[in-house]
Length: 378
Image 1 (tube, rainbow, N blue to C red):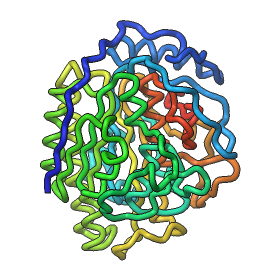
Image 2 (tube, rainbow, N blue to C red):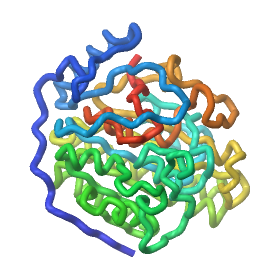
Image 3 (cartoon, rainbow, N blue to C red):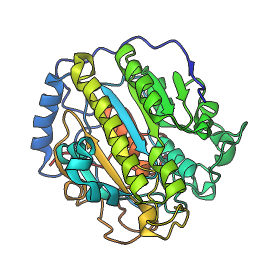
Image 4 (tube, helix red, strand yellow):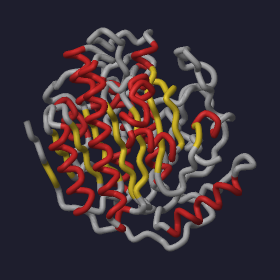
């Protein structure tokens, strides 16, 4: 099933030859001794036309999030491609190894990465976790979350309604208000929720139900033809296969291999086009899945709540994300931390990692990475 929609693409954003020494929006760069290494990375990113890359912020408290600063009209710099591999259990990557998943292992090896990030605390299902990825909020609306607790295509629903916040923001809205183009590509019709919620902020939405290869083909054409600051790609093959054949089954591992091949095609498109040289990738998953079952709904099961998270591209150092963020994040080991205390890296950080990479302010009233504290340099 194909549900493409589009609106006129905004005028291209011209990237500066060099990057300013301060974060866009006026907040000075502060942080630990790695600041000098970050400055060097920024010069490299500027030479590649990469645009602003984030500074190091102070440790983020775990209490109720404070409102983010008001959005500015500072234009986004560079491009961000967010990729969610629905239902990707990180164990599949270790089992298949570099030989079985060379593209994903390349991103893990060359970027700032971890295979021990966490899904949302409340639920380990698709639509609630993806709603956290684009809003930067937790799920529970009673605690300033987005309120998306269902996991099906519900025509007429919006996140404004579910959250009780008529003007709730998202990464799409922040980028759009700053003058950047946006797009959403998904393999599940339930993602139409996002376009209903922010119809003016998503310039193009393409949904191809269970057609990952065709969707990636459409994405690659769009990357080449349009200068979009933020694009979100959702691929559902691993999740679909896990439900049908069981997580970590032979069929599931084959599906992960197929996804790796699709990611490789996206990388080739990016690397063969000079206009795409500023692209940074943020990759994660909404949840994993319990081996030997077709289920991932129990939020207390490690195989369900453990997900990968990586940042890759110009200005990003290679290394372990937890090692780069000892002052703001804690590797949870095998645990499932709640909302109190130092937090692990979570899939809901996608929104504000993207705004940080683009040199924009955080998503207003978001929770995850709301101070742009996640670092991807040593």
